[in-house]
Structures are given as C-alpha cells and as structure tokens.
Length: 212
Image (cartoon, rainbow, N blue to C red; front, side):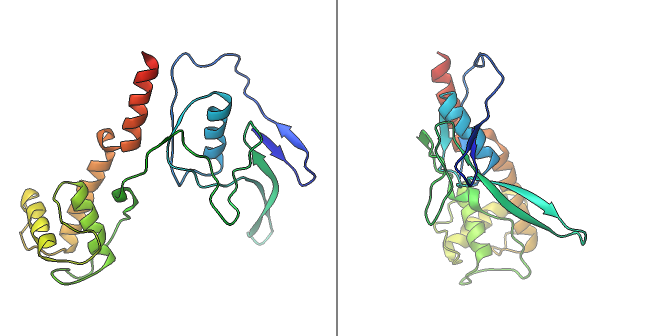
C-alpha cells in the first residue's frame, strides 16, 4: 500500500515475504468492507493478482490518528490518504468508489436482516418492520411467505403456522416473542452453515478451478 500526505508525498509499504504462498487465494468482500480490510483486499488484488469475490467495498481511503484530552474525550484527525499498490484512491466523495470485485456476487436480502423484538403479538392485516424481517427469514428458510414487504396477509400466516408446527410451537399464526426468538434462532443456524454462504461457495469453486 501507499500513503500520501497533504503535500502529495507518497510512502510505500511492502510485504517482507520473498515468495507467494504455495496455495491459491481468493478474497471475500462486501459493502461493509472498509479501511483496513480494503487495504488488505487491494494489496492482494493488485500486488498478488488474487481475485476478489463479492460486492464493491465501502470506500474509506483516509489515514486517521486520535488525540486524547485530559477530560477523557478525544478527536480523530485525518492525516493522509492511503492508496492501493497502483496508486488508486478508493475513498468515496459524493459517490461510490471502493474496490470492485473481480467476480460480483451480491449478498442475499436475508443477510441484511437485523435482530428484532416483538412487544405484542403481530398478526393478519398488520404491517411492521418486524413482520418484514420475519417474512425475509421465513423465505430464506424455505417456508415461502409469498411477500417480504412487512404486510401480514393470509399466506404469511400459513407460512408462520408451518414454521410453528415444525418447531413444536402453538400454531397460532401470530408472531409473538417466543415465535420471534425461534425464527431468529433458526436463522442463525441457517446463516452459520457455510453451505448457505453464497459468496463463500462461489469463492470455493473459484479456488477449486485454480487448484486443478
């Protein structure tokens, strides 16, 4: 990598390794890859020629330092840009820069679902972000709710009843906190299985081809 100060002076940083690793390498990136992870991805892509799989990264190309004060507060100061081995600045300014993957593999919608809590049971003809998250998860788990817009219709109800039956829960067709916890626990098991990581599976296939 390189850094560039406000006067345009550049400094290079290189690996001390003399040889490439004796095995193929593929790098996974997504929209949340930023700063240090972008530096690593750019170094492997531009210096090592290793392919990147996933989505365009966040785009944070600044070098910062922190100054602490006696009252416990601190301030972050931007002191330089960091550049890729080829001198590219990935920082986003009013648009999207970042590092582009060699093989584009978007993350499925369910990978953006965040944990949710249900205070009161939710059911037919209601609309909420919790219902939308539940629908997205049920769809990923194969229960086919039919929609993922947060509106609780008859098909969503039937899908939820099927899930409740599978998990040995009362088949109320309503999203209460117990059901919500079961849905999220099943989802964690689902995304923890490497077989369901789309980007990882593409990267593995790429590695297999390179290993032949």
